Amino acid sequence: MVFDWLWNFIVSYKEIIIFYLIIIILIRIFRKRLTFQSKFIVLLKTKLGLAFMEKIANKHRNMVKLLGYIGIGIGFTGMVIICFLLLKGLYSLIFVPEAPAVLTPVIPGVKIPGSPVFVPFWYGIIALFIVVVVHEFSHGVVARAHNLKIKSSGLVMFGPLFGAFVEPEEKQLTKAQDTKQYSVLAAGPFSNVLLAVVVGLIIVFIVAPIQGTMEYNAGVSFVDLDPGYGAEAAGLQPDVAYTFFDGKDVSSVEELSLMLQCKSPGEEIRIGNEKGTYTVMLNESPANPGKAYLGVLGATSAMKLKEENLSFLHTLLLVFRRLLEWVVVLSLGIGLANLLPLGPVDGGRMLLVSLTAAYGNKKGKFIWGKTSILCLIIIIILVLVPIIKGIF
Image 1 (cartoon, rainbow, N blue to C red):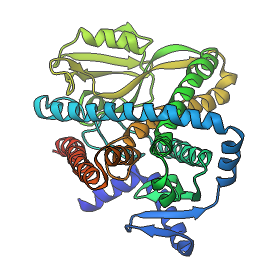
Image 2 (cartoon, helix red, strand yellow):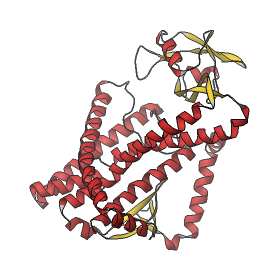
Image 3 (cartoon, helix red, strand yellow):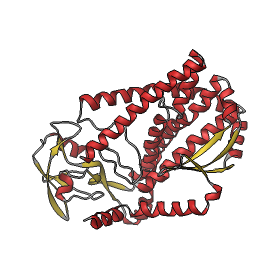
């Protein structure tokens, strides 16, 4: 029994297991060049990118400073938004138990119990790395624009997650004017917002139109299936095009959504394509009680090529688009998460600067500490409770 479970686990997560085994071996080989903090944070300190940061800061100093100052307003606005979302999530958790999780850890390739979000492994790893590099690079550029020293840059492994870091001279940063500190700290989250906007525009105005010239709607496919619900029980598969639902041709997600709105929990719906037909028992939606739930995690309009000789180019474009979509999602998520009024993250440090300026060093740090603890408690509740509910 245990052997079967272990084997199924290895088969399900073989790519992730092989990837991290390679990383562990590399860490072992190059351990003398690495810095270890708190036993689960691994740093590879380098000077990589510092000259480029210096070049941009010198060439566009006024523009970088201006964007940094704009980032201060965006940063504090984002802090208010994320605090509101935390409190709203806590209220929903207590008074609306069926509501989906509003805060979830992101581990590429791993389905977190109780979470509506699943990040595919390779897309997640690459997108996460891009987002973090942009975030940290922005800190460095704005710091150099204000003539604040950068000690090092490099790669970081924080538990199972990868990223990059930029290490400013902390004593110099903490002694700088408040506006300079705000500007440097807000640069990372602000750059994540800008990255999401720019990449989103690329998808809408460049990638999507090119894709549209190659294909046409030909049914609906599902990104993933929700374990234990009707779609999985009926034998549906992710990334497979289904062209008819209850005997009617359906070529888009919008058409399927309209059809499901007319259904109730407990009803059956026939779904199929040229290879077969499946009967799915509709469940009650965990997010919207009383509404029918097919049991799928994400649906997209399945597309077919207008010309078969475009297959390779079309596949590359789909991979590129999906990566860009995850860059948008993770960039916004990480940008907001870094604005939490919590300890060492950007938002927490911005709050510390403002509180010490308003109330003095001792009282400001006291209020900041209590705020961080309260924020941490809310985060732990919002993360753990949906996971426990999802498991049991």
